[in-house]
Image (cartoon, rainbow, N blue to C red):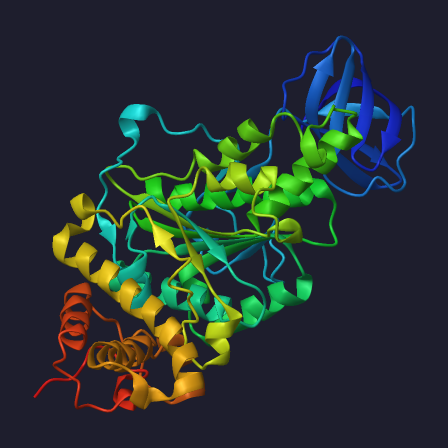
Length: 455
């Protein structure tokens, strides 16, 4: 039987704070403590120690707890599966399986692993080509990048995530991790079923800190997910995709915990430690010489206020953003990406070369002018356009259609075979559309194809 050391007694209880009077034993921050009452085990994580008083955050419901109960140390911190057995599994924030399958553990590791040291980080990683035309052209990513993923419900975010998982696995046999922070349980079940149906579940691992759970669960889900991703990067030497939905809810959970512990907040109720709290997560997402973690982080923007303190702190760590837009989706253009607000630090002449850089600028110029011309045509008609504007209008419509794409994971719904498109083909196709090579071809021929077929 496991020997547990007596720590002290509970002297006060609230939903997010259990205060313990020490009995002369020292404990470490983040150590897991336990108490038992009426055949139920309650766990707490040490948050802070002040003299002989410990403030601990409960990992489960505090219903049934009472003052005066003895508390014991486990000598451990939160742990997560750290082996090949993590693939195809769904875990809660604390590393327990919630997919109804038996727990099969081989090795576990604490979820607060060290960040990489400076010599270990590789900032000159290769480009991570996804085979998705609109992403590789407008927002190419380097391995180890952190990308914001913005978009509401119904604009194709889940399909895009599934396609990214599929394509990266298909190209490099690399796996993925999905972390739901404050996810609705219904959405979590939907994702699980969709991944299973698409044949992607065994290529990934999922962690859910569900919306109905307390702030601690929503806070810890990110660290558990990072631990899974680090196993794939460091032990399996893979280029891992890490999806966090929603990173803002992690900050929100930290705020709630700090408020319960009577920590003085700054603007909008965020903790004074917001910078270090976000950095604790973001600094673990990096590329090494052997593998990489590339993350896509959905960001909720409160009251659509882009200047919100938490949004600004998160954005300062990002290398770009992918914006899905309902107006684009309503036109039947998928992936429904707003190319004007989608950006990447890779769009630099030194990184992607002059040809790619010049083509991005030219396409953006064409599409911006196209929007202006739509308003003119609505009033005067297309016949009133100059020859230059007419060419821009027609070629822009072809470009707009060209950046749609048949998805592998949507084949059952669309009946169109998915395509992985190389960036070399995309640049050549775009160049030819802009150059007028396809002026005589109807714009409908450019919708939902891979690269343009040539005789």
